[in-house]
Image (cartoon, chains in turn yellow, red):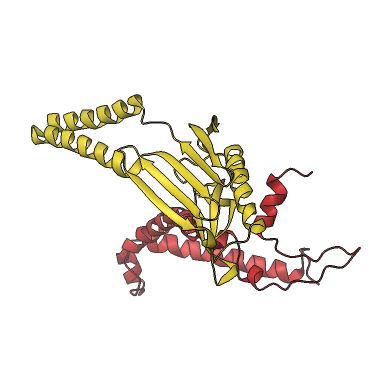
Length: 188
Length: 126
């Protein structure tokens, strides 16, 4: 069953959460960020080109104009490929593990898989970020040989930064699956 | 005991500081404004260069301005990043002893693990 709901990110941008339940022990949760707006792209491009034209008028060197065009193009490609994240998704398969995927605007996808024996819990943590305190979802990792100690914290949805209402939905779905771990004995 | 009330000793310290700071200020003004020739004629030759009469206040003001920015930066640097375990626990919480649960007694104060806190907050009580 698939559902899509609208929420807001912590900076106010509209985001969409898509929950898909593939089976009783498998959830896929994807948060989609707003796409690159045409108006901000035009604003930045015009600003750079106007500044370059001003420099050209002052220095009478036409290389400034071609350099500005190159910088704009290359900057846009780098931004789309390395910075602008379109969708972040979380695939939880009980008994197997957790897969975290980030899809960039250029189509690049970066994936991390965490085995279920290393996952201690999925919690909503609050921390100071820049000048604010934000809620963020994170996976607590454990060393299978010493399960009482939290060895690492993996924050999720770092670039979309959903607010608490969206995080609670994701948290409840994850807890449904993680609780099955205790009732169903794992084969190790 | 310690109280902020006025005392004779405090009055004397305050007046001594007042006189001392006025004397220091007058000395600074004399050093900055009186031409060197007059000071030499009095026999006072071993003064720092007058350049410092302007340089030291300028340095002080710039240091205060940079100090604001530096303090802000140090604060941001010492904030734990989002992926560090310091946002979840610390040495004192890891080494705390679990006291036994007693009936009808207030439970002992302890650091509650974040999983338990989350369950309490986000799952509605039934």
